[in-house]
Amino acid sequence: MSEKRAGLFSGWRGRVGRLFVAVISLALVAIVLTGYLFTPLDDLRVNRMVNRVLEEQLAHLPNAALTSVVLNPTTTGVNIIASVDTPQVLEPQAVKVIEEHLSAQLGRPVQLFMHCRVTKVISAAGSTNIRPHLNRDGKVSHVQFPPSMALLQQAEQITREALADLDHIYLDDISLVELDSGPVLVVAIQSPSQPSAERVESFQEFIQERLQNSSIRVDIRRISTSEVSAKGPVLLGAAHYGTLDEGQRQTQAKIESLLTRLIMDKPNFYVQAIDAAPAGESWSVRGLVAGSNVLSPADIKALQDAVKHELNQQVDLKILSRVELEVGEEGYQSPPIH
Image (tube, rainbow, N blue to C red; front, side):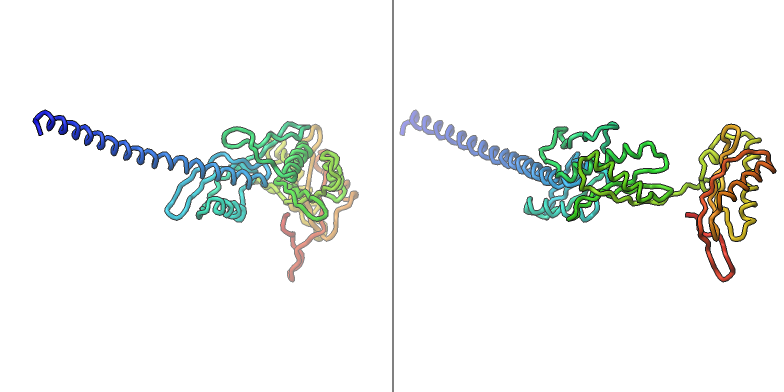
């Protein structure tokens, strides 16, 4: 072979070798990039599936909205941290149900943690329109609320409006129980007194009229509450926290002391609390008394007259009188204050 032909062959072989190396390098780069591409695509698919399942499950909870999701794959499955706006903290059993749905959809073990931020959705008075559920992207969710959840949202709005002007009643929680006989609205309130059956019936008729649903019934669950300051049980807020000058404070103490003594002079009567506060030219007095029987209107008038006679003060006296005593072998004692 001539030197010229040998040179050409050698050059061609060198170019082929360099081209082969370049092709192999490009193939390796493509494989690496494809691997990196597959991972985000898989993560995106899983993320979308997780969000869909969570939104579907949260649709059964009133006013619950998914705000963010964090996925943390592990060697055995995936950990999920879901942040949710909800009117109440989710029970562990509810989280377990959602966790099982996620595990079934992903085909791998799931450990779900729900970060619950307690919120309430309330619209303006006179309206039962509730802001539509927004997903974590700020768009209206495609998941439709069940009719029962829409009913509960409207019922809560109406209930809050109805109780807004009642200072002594606070709405603690509201839930809807579906029975074969129809829906029952369970309203939990904090109140110092037990609501009467007549008032509950009136409120039930009001709810039925506003919701245009004659089958819904109302159950009031009362949570008994009481307030106590350093002075004692609060019957009149002005008696504990009002601005009184020194003369008024002395008069207040005299009125409360006199009424306490006069009531407890009666056999088996115990003053558990008594508050006096200025009310214009007179004094407003409220008392809590337990005894073997109740005080009569005549007793109240006699007590008011006694204050007028001894202290020259006009009082408007109202007593919550209960037939209740604590009885032991040593005799009668004042019962616990409710």
